[in-house]
Every structure is written in C-alpha cells, then in structure tokens.
Image (cartoon, rainbow, N blue to C red; front, top):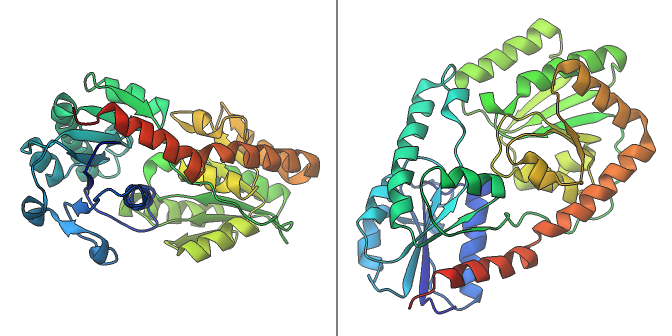
Amino acid sequence: MNWRAVHQFVPMLAKGDAIGDHVMWIRDHLRTRGLDSEIFVGTRHSRTSNETHPLDKADSRLKGTRDSLLLYHVAQASPCADFLMSRDEPLALIFHNFTPPELLLGWDPAAAFEILRAQDQLADLVEKARFAICDSAFNARDLLSFGEVPCSVIPLPVAKDSPPRPKPAKPVILFVGRIAPNKGIHDLISAMKILHERHPDVELRIVGGSTSDAYQNAITGLLKALGLEESVSLTGWVTDEQLEVEYSRASIFCSLSSHEGFGVPLVESMSQGVPVIAHANSAIAETLGNGGLLLTDRSPSVVATALERVLLDEALAKRLGESGLRRSKAFTSNQVADAFDEALELGKPR
C-alpha cells in the first residue's frame, strides 16, 4: 500500500466494545505494516486516554498531505464528522451502522435524536469519502441509502483459537450485549419463563451493561413480575477475563436482537464452540451463516421450544457447536487483514 500514514477517528474509544476493539486492531495492524497510525477521538475515555489523542490536537499532528488517509468509524453523532469535513486529506469511512431510531424513541428520545443527527452527518461524509468499508453486506446496503461510494465488505476480526470446552455443569442460557430496547431481552426473558416452568434448573445470564435506564427498569420489573429474579442474572459490564468464563459455562447462546450490523457475540460464541440460537434479521443470518440455529419467529413459545430441544438433544448441541467453530474461521485476524489491505488499495494515493 502506498499510504504513508492512516489515522483513525472515532467518537469515543472504549475497551471491550466491538468498535473500540476494531479500532485498536486496525491501529496495531497498520503499524506492523510500517505505517504511521494514531487514534483521534471526539470524547476521551479515562480507560483509553493513553491510546488516543483529543480532537483539538489533531491539527498539530496531521500533515495535510495526500498520502495520509483519514479513517472515520461511523456509529454515532460526533464532532469528528465536522472536523473531517474541513480537512484536505483523503477520507474513508468504516460504517458500523446505527440502531434504527424508531426502536429507541419510546424508551430514550434523546438517543433517538442523536442517531438522526448522526445520519445527517453521514449524508455529508459519504459525498466527501473516497471509499468505505462495512462490517457486513447488510451494512453496505444501508450505507447506499446515504449516497453512492465504493464499498468493501470486511467482517470484524473476532474469532480466536479456544481450548476444548468442558460440558457445562448446569444448563445456562447466555446473552451478551447491551441492555437496550433493540436487543430483545424482554422477549428472551418471556421465553425463559416458559422454559423455566419445564426445567426449573435452567439459568439465564444476561451479560452487559445498560444504555437505557428506562429499559433497564422495565427488565427488572419484568423479572419480578414473572418470578424469575433467582433464575435470571444481570451481570452488568464484565472484564474480558470474566466474559471468557461466561462463554465457558454456557450451554447455549441466544440472541433475539431486532437489529445488528454484525453481531460480535455471535462470533465469540461460535469460536468457543457454544451452540447459537438467533433470530434471523438484519446482519444476523449473514454473520451466523450455517454456524447456528436461525429462527424466523421470536415468539416466546417458539424460542422456548428451540432452547429446550438443544438442551435435551446432546447430538444436536454438538453439531451446532462444531458448525459454529467452522464458521468462526471466516473471522480470524489473518483472514480479515488480507481483505483490509486490499480495501486500502482501492483508495491509495495517486
């Protein structure tokens, strides 16, 4: 590649976050290729301040040359967008998609408004960008609605080799992700109520922090109303080490999310050999491929029946785990690195 430098811009960098991990991976990969690569953020996070530069320091660090590429990770509204619109260096976008604002409006109107603002920013950025990278073909189709731009589809580098998983000591259903309205946690809990009546020893573990106080309160109220407070655990945010333990103890990973631009926990589960059951929508079917069980109906009775079948049928659970492991090989760092380098060639300086 002919770039001298490739610098990334992101609204905020958070460790353990899918976008944050992607930004760090790209930075490290580019440096191994001998390129100058720094990370600039619109808002600094205390846990990653040593990895980033504030936006107001970017002017003094950028050279303004045509052989320096600026990569912007699009996921929310940010002052980064206005800054990049003012720059002369070539611009490329990495589009992670937005949660549809209508899924948030009834729970968090301010968050829905911020997504609308981010969409307005993206429409301008697409006109300026030389090319774009999307995590999935689903995201690429969505990006087209904001304007025409050459686009490569490159998944996130998530999968890693894991030791063989021991059989879980007790039946555990796992969900990993934010406690947010679009994640369908209320549907999963409703399915758990049916499953728990048939199998009282089953536990549901919901691993992830809340981004909506109103939805969090609704989930807590639902657990109390259904009498599931002892059978469903809300762990909050966990460390990477704690997350590994959660996957190692899981019998099934289940996602009923209404919208995913990629679905990192799907790949994490597959790479650990955890059988996956997921509702087929947005990018979920694309990411899961034939590596799990896809549902077209997420009504509680259907989901509970699917969970029960996999829990009781060891041969089926084994097949799903093996299929997931095979599918996860498409998301290794080596696979993604080659495609990423090819994408940068699309916009190389001329």
